[in-house]
Length: 356
Ligand code: CP3
Image (cartoon, rainbow, N blue to C red; front, side):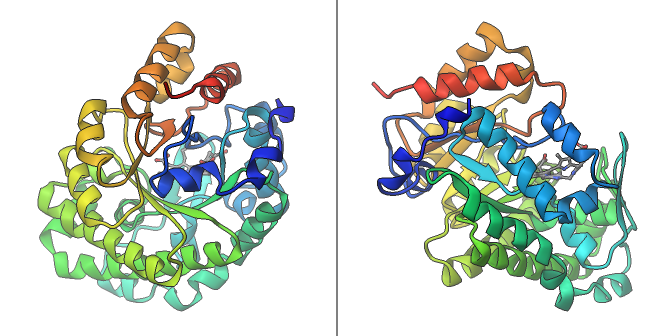
């Protein structure tokens, strides 16, 4: 499919992704897929074997550039997302972080204010320098029409991993801290807000043209907690980036936040809102897409299913949202079981689609 990555359309005007995030509606919407680089691709697994562990893989510019480009060559999406991980921020703050095969991430738990106050905020953006090297190389190597997306985890989601010491089913420990001692927990969130602003600023300076904040576990909080630990930190990050880099669009992905998506659309200042697969499309068109661009939200399991079921749902999403500012994506990341041919079928359908 590499022939599909032509340099032609990129030379005329704004890249398709950036135009959509600015509210423009063109003949077809841009698309990219969360976790488009990953284990579902045999060429990713081959490169992955060259690194001793996942963290070193993320910090190896040659390998990170290569795996970022792999899905671009195969599927010609409208954007590349930097290959890195949301847990590099805790790692850079001095929290021991490891990924064990098949077990998910393990972090040294942060549960005391003393530990929060020892986090290495002054060193964080410098520690992440190899990532900026990857961004700079990608900015040079990507086809002209492909936009480069930088990213970070949102403070709440990163805090869940730091406090729980890894993934969690019920978030009991972090929620008891956040809801029980909010002023202490605020210190951790403040450190993460500051680290995230520095990290994303450096990515932008290295060449990221759009940034996305992943708040994967936003749906774990009740209403008031959501406002304080997801919406407010997001608004602060957006405001700081907007002031320094007014032309760089910001996408937020507050996964699972339900009706609170409407508040994020109205109050956070984001340019784009990533919708999880549970968000009803007609509601999103009415309540969200009138405030900012929306992105989403094909269920990743439909990409495993493929065939007519996948195609029908792709069309339903396009019909509902394709007439407004829209970025086609999944409602969450690609899963490892996904057949690459199904992603290819999706890419073909999106390249061919036209607004009527
Ligand atoms: O292609 C891309 O989307 C860019 C790279 C990217 C990765 N992780 C690579 C990765 C991005 C944007 C992320 C974000 C991320 N990381 C999130 C938010 C998005 C989401 O999916 O909810 C979260 C929660 C993480 C934390 C994380 N990283 C977990 C829980 C795991 C282990 C689970 C798993 O899938 O293995 C990771 C590891 C990880 N990050 C992999 C990849 C490709 C797989 C690791 C491997 O190859 O061994």
